[in-house]
Length: 284
Image 1 (spheres, one colour):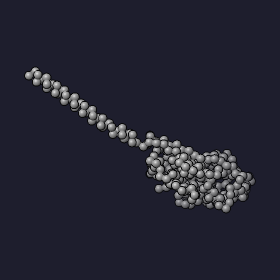
Image 2 (spheres, one colour; image 1 turned 120 degrees about the horizontal axis):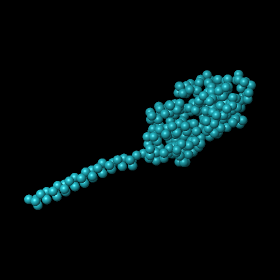
Image 3 (tube, rainbow, N blue to C red; image 1 turned 30 degrees about the vertical axis):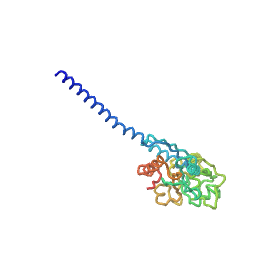
């Protein structure tokens, strides 16, 4: 009887050990999917290069996307729209950024995504008494045909024209929309490398005039009416304000998985709300 009891105890011990081992295996199996899920999470890096007008918006969108995808790093660079188009075509950046329409010869092999609309505000120093100009008057200023504010009812003072560098999307869009194909910018203008630099220069010179992205307009400078229309989001959206342009993301062919996920986020309701909050115009 003692022998039988001993056998029973040994049997029970084996059963318990087997149960513990089985439970341990079960726990490992339950943990495995968690590791697989972690490994399958979105990861990688994206370089966005191009328009300095698009750059601040890209930085906001990138920050929001990275907060939701900790495995993704997005590096946002400037350089101008032409540089962004070139970077996309050559694969130097996963996403190029342009603040002007692409020329026909630039479109080959490029996928375009319009992420926002923007107006270009013509700005003067806040102390300048000029509040409105016509499109023709603005053209005459930036081509050097008129050089004194008194010709428009202002002070007897030479106009300081502040321009962007060739290759800038803002430069190209303003040239197309205001200057025209049969005229050229004045060669006496001060040239600045970014939207912020134009704004700072105009803010520091009472006789200066320049043009900047509508999303970069603040109380440092005064955005004047053009043909009687104020430079506002509502007026760009309605088509009343004529100096406007698209913000484009560009990829060489189809984007890779990480870039596609980011572009999808930008085009989503959440991404377009960020566009709106940055004072640009959502595309949807």
